[in-house]
Length: 572
Image: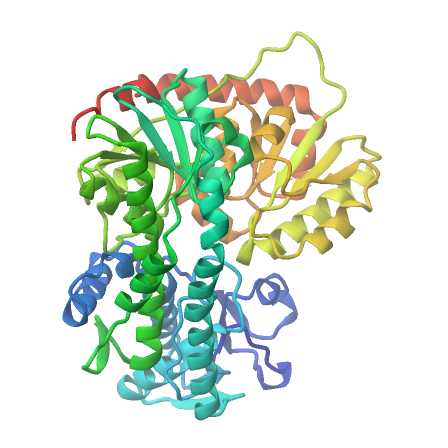
């Protein structure tokens, strides 16, 4: 029996036998598994997420080589060590469970390829395949521990992969440096355009994305909080009256930060987690670290300069709506340096993972109850809140024109949404429906043209571009459809009926283990037919939704609103 590991690679069906197992995260292969002879197993990237030993191993690894490493550990957890250890753990489990006699690797080389930019983790891969970082590690571990034959197909030249890895990382770091240099003058001109907020107990929202700024502005406005400003790196139209653009660094400061970001590691790099042990190529690894350190130092200094200009005091508060990456770590570092309280409010999904750096704010508020229960065991910084902006409206009339909006998700979810839209349109056309169906692509969606071509085949179809905000679409919609997006929480927040398109085992796993989807309130559908039934029987479905909404809110009882959260955090 063979185990075939397919990571961004293709293989001929001729080498696949009936009893073989294919381990992959390729959605097309998973969708068409019935056409293959072999059994297809989806990679479970969450397999080690709750194991504190993984985060301890990462912390130990960085402490051994770099003294100050806060800005490295979480990003390396998410983009490097987590995916690598997850794939290897999946493969080893299958080898032992099915008594595998042959391991087939496809792609990659014996060179120790490593990157965190445009590689594994969140975001589209840029000139990179997962097999490049995994296969040489998997081969060495299997060779050491198991007596099985290893077949390596499409193996690339070691020297070529070294040159590719090195030049790719050099381009990333010097590209980031020159972009900062080019933006110096432009940013300086914009930074003076602000509206000051005077007085004590001011609130400074810090946002690196327009979505973050919009969420903070929505919360502040709804709760009649006026003494706030939103600090960002660029103009954000939705908060322009309250916007402060971060002070740029001078050319001289940028050069100094770039020089000081250089990292030298003398010893060989070995990472060990349980039975997984591998060597990391030092030159390309240090280039990745230098890029992270340069960006971190630049952001920290930008924020400090901006707060110095605004005259922040320890009676003021910094509020963010981030997750666990470098930006929130930079903000928290600045908050400590200038003695201001840092509060983080969950906006998008916060995965239940044992991060190496777990304390990310003075107080970190989560609205996902299961996620909160998980993190409160790791740190007392985590607290619960449930922000609501509107309740479901009661209706004494039947709604005839139904506005349905599908909010997509990127990366491995793209193919799922393309299939969802195709099948949903086919059903609606079959019953001659007049339902208005629109698509709002995720801001990182990479197959906009395909979505556009599909939706235009439906008479009442439309697609929205980036200029239309998520909040505006939620308010105008009658039904929201998504799989595991945080828009399902925003629907609850705004009292809008939402459908969880729970169409496969991956979505099912996420829905059951992460309550950002709110299945207690939102309507779960496991087939396209069920989705169509909910939409076409909208008025009855809406009554059921309202009952679920108020039942859940009664169950949750009293919860802290934003005014209370901010007012009780005046002292550091």
